[in-house]
Structure formats: C-alpha cells, structure tokens
Image 1 (cartoon, protein in one colour):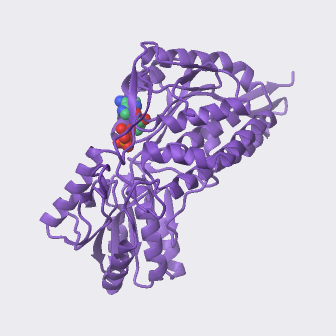
Image 2 (cartoon, rainbow, N blue to C red; image 1 turned 90 degrees about the vertical axis):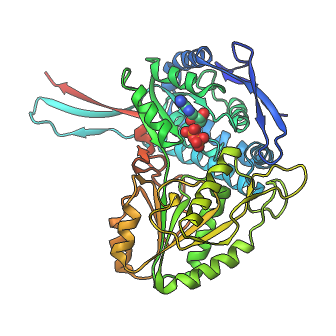
Image 3 (cartoon, helix red, strand yellow; image 1 turned 180 degrees about the vertical axis):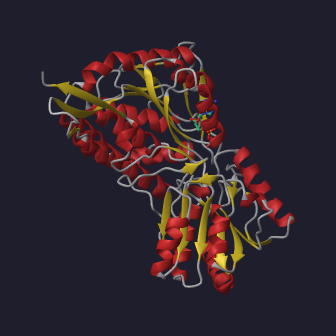
Length: 480
Ligand code: ADP
C-alpha cells in the first residue's frame, strides 16, 4: 500500500494536468511508483486550502495540536518498518539508517508538540505609569516547505512539527527523488487528525512550485533545505513579496584530529559522520585535518575501518553503504577523487563506483581514503556529498582553525582533543553553527541546527525553531 497522489485540502488528487513522473530505486533503476507532476496551479490550490484552514487551526489550543502531533509520532514509531522500507526503496540508504531516520523524524513532532505549549509572551515595565506593554508570540500563518532527498522524512518533520505546533498551516514540496516518504507521512497525519488544509503535499516541478510559494501573498514563511545555489535563487526571488525565508543550505565540514585526541573515538566518529547515508548529508565532514604526530596512525586505523564497510542495496542485511542518489552524484564524487589524485593525493582505498551484482546500478561508490590532500584540490573547497575521506596534515592549532574557517560555508565542524582549555578555544573560534567536540553525531531535535555564512539562516530544533514560525507582536495598552 503506497500513497501516490497529492494531498490538497484533505483530498488525495492527481496533478491538474494529469501528468506524472517516475520515482526510481537508485539501487536498481526500477520504477517504484508514479506521482503527480504538479505545477503552479496545484501549488496555488494548496496554498489557498492552507489559507482557508489557517484561522480555525490557529484558534485551537496548543494542547489540542500537541495531542495530534503525539498521535502522529506514535503511528510513525509503530509503522517504522513499513516507512523505512519505502524510504530505502526511493532513497537507497541502508534499512538500519532508514529506521533510525523514522525515529529521528518522529522526535521532531514530539519535541515541537511540547514547545508549542511554551510560546510565552512577556509583560514589560512601561516608561510611564499610565501604560502597560505586552509582547505576544503568534503563528505567522500559512507556511511552505521545500525539502531534499537525503533525509526524506526528517527534513519534513523538523519543519512541519514546529509549524503545526505554533498554529501555522503548511504546504510541503518534497524532493522529486523521494516523494513517497512525504506522501506516506501525510497519510499518517490525516489519520492522526490533522484537519483538511492544515497540511498539504504537492509533488512536481520545483521551479514552478517554488515560484508559487514565493509569489503568493498568503505564504508568510518558506523553509528550505537544499543546496546553496537554490537557496540563493530563492532569496533573490523573495525580494518582491519579502517572504520570510528559513534556509538550511550546503556545508563543508572540517573534522580536526589533534595530537592529544582519543584516536579510537576519532576514528569511530569519523566513520559514523562520514559514511552515514554514503556521505550524502549536509553535516558530513568534507575535510579531515589531522595533526602530523598522529597522522599515520589515524590513517592506518581509518583504512582498517573502511575495510569493514559493506556496499550494497540498502534492503540487504549487513549493508552499511548504499548507492549514491543518481549518476550526476557519482560523476561529481569521482571528479573530486580524480582531481585530488591528479594533484598529488595518494589513494589508499576505493576511488570508484562499482556495480556490486547483476541487476544493480553502478552507483555504489566504494568507501575511499585519500592521503596527502592540500588546499589546491576541489575536495578542499566544494561539498563532495559522497563516501570520501581526504586527509590533510597540519602542525599547530592556529593553522588547523585557520584552514577550517577558510570556506564560505559554516554549518558543522568537528574536533577531537582531550585538552579542556583547547575545547573552549577551538569551539569559540570555529565559524560554524554546529560544533561536535569528540562527537561525530550532534544532530538532535532538542538543539538548534543551522549554519552561518553560505550555509543558511535560521535554526531548526530546540526552542529556537519556534522563532521561525512565529511573529512577535507588541501591544501598548494605555490605562486611560
Ligand atoms: P540537491 O542538489 O541536494 O538535490 P537542491 O537544492 O537541488 O539540492 O534540491 C533541494 C530541494 O529544492 C528539492 O526539493 C528540489 O526539488 C528543490 N528545488 C530545486 N530547484 C529549485 C528551484 N529552482 N526552486 C525551488 N525549489 C527547487
């Protein structure tokens, strides 16, 4: 049972043109399903449904909305296996990771449900005795979300949870590679009691749907997760309507290993953060900076750890590394590796994509370790988005921090050390929104996730996410 229609105003419908597009399994290129190829008219219908549903939804209590979100999270947890299998088919990640993502995705509903109850206002002492000043936090209204394919469920729930909890309605446009997880979530939302129009999902043409989101005056916030290029395009397009944007864009994370690091922990953290989702995460380390005193030992242990990874289709037991999402992704990762080797890096393992068995696509990029990386190479400047560890040596702390900050991106950074004073110095010096200290897996619904510089604006998670979906209103009350 698979939902393959759009949800608009509580009704499951095809695109207005009747057109569809294919959703492919990246491991086999089999057609998993056909979904509506929606466009501007479908997006407008969804926005208008969300606008009609808005007054009633915002007037419900936070407790009422929380109860629905908790029911929705509970049904995700009960149906983890079905949702994870669907995700693996359209996205390719190993089933264990897909199950983990469903739990992570549900946690955003649970967290937001409770944060929605804490949208406290304030009473501020007035400058004169005949007035009182009040500050209210109110839902912004209709919101829209554009989400990527790398986390087909969690990138939706981290937006949808807080929006709904705050009293906003939403239209979601999932990535064209992974619409089925979005539609499955929408089905569970309807069953959990999300009223018609409060959540709408429109699959289809990104440019046309994105334009409708930014041109329609009812949409007050557009939350986007994806590439920096598309983020910049949306910022430019938002100039006319001044639609508020929340942007989570690309990253280029440094992973620094100091000479006093616990190397076992550093290797475990490197493997977990680098190879999750075959390196296709925005907080994936892209630059490994390793102190020369521990360089050889770190590389030797990484080589051993890479040999333990197993590439294959995500639905197979024991597989740790699934296919990359498409041929363009494979070509980019390969180009980064070839460029590094041409400029003098040494390939210790991997280096190319393989076809693990007949009937599978040749998109399984082998876990790759490169030594001798320097600042001239593409992988030192661009997000690789693949399972490639490129190691560069450094000699002192100031040099490592300078290299780490020498990028327009500022999403996540990692470092390993046992020196407490250095923890503070380096954590404060890194120009990144998220810093993992002896921690390769910092993501959680209860902490603020987001970047500096070209990695975006706004924060998702923690109490901060509620700022994205609320307006602050100041009421000045004369006592007469
Ligand atoms: P990636 O390179 O990871 O696929 P993208 O930024 O291209 O990242 O995609 C992230 C999301 O942005 C997807 O839902 C995609 O459909 C959407 N998208 C791509 N191009 C546009 C656009 N011009 N306007 C609005 N959304 C877009």
